[in-house]
Length: 475
Image (cartoon, rainbow, N blue to C red; front, side, top):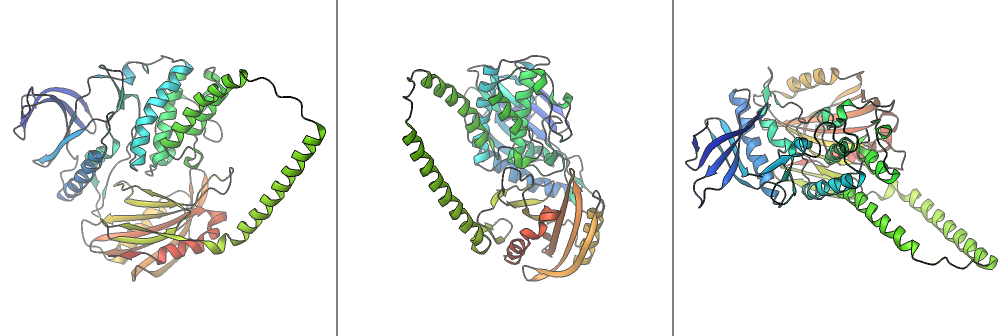
């Protein structure tokens, strides 16, 4: 490969890295004055099967367009993407510097609390931009964060979505799948099971913070009975920072900050708190209040509280009857659906799970550890299958999950097409869940909607879920 010129323009001069997801080279862009250096990433699907190659080609174009949208001064710019002889190439900025695993996060090295706060702020500022584009990195770890030698700025590299192309396989039924993307220790449980979300990246950044404070790899830390990381006994740290990190690495994703935006706000609040304490010290103590003043405050507080309670009761009574729906449209897949306006919408587009979008119910209170959700998936079939044939395969896959118990199976309709519906319970990460899955076929694609909830709360949003499912339109 050394000395080869790609597209008659990018001359390969050095191999930078080699791994399970492909090779990375340093090249010269000979079409520009001064022949600036560029990074060339060479991706070659493990399986040369034509069906796998077709999926890889579609994915490659999709992910390259996604990366092109990430125009940020601390993310390597994408200059070109192309295919040659069934192999795929990305051309990006070359960032001259060292990744964090070789510098401040080298084995055994510990940073001060102030240094960790600054590190968190620097990482989260870039990641917040990514999350605002609704893009998940999926492989944040010290090796994928480079500190540029020129000015010390941090860069996020090697987004995990591209690595799916290298890991594609095709099973005997002609279904194309990809392996799970991520690095042990920095990858939370939902990502390990193929369901990454924005808060999965937040977990990774929190794990990096723990490593920076303790000098210990996250994968080497013990976990308590609730599967939470045990790390506070390894280092002296302020309760405020420790609480933020604990929330970032919570086992259940719905206990974490939803995205880097909220995590960054929490870190910024540490500096605000320090400034407030300093300001408070410069203000003289207030005069002691009179008894009559205290009585007036007490009366006002009681009145306001009573009004709030009555208002809350009123809202509670009308809550179920006042559900408003918003419209979601995905033109790429020809999908239109009405979903509850108060539910969080997260577009995913994952080849691992075939998920397109999730609609997640709001938290009921601080003790709510599982949010009900509706998931839409679209799977491309590489060979024709009837609904009955696909249903047989799907039921086999469902039955392989832990402690599965089928409750009902019915012929149904979805988007005015013949469909099949199953309801079952399953144990996932220690939680007993109840799911309803319904799927139909159209033009070699499988359209599926999954309603998932805790088993004892399944009926609570069932009516809302059924209304959403019935509203699906396939264009």
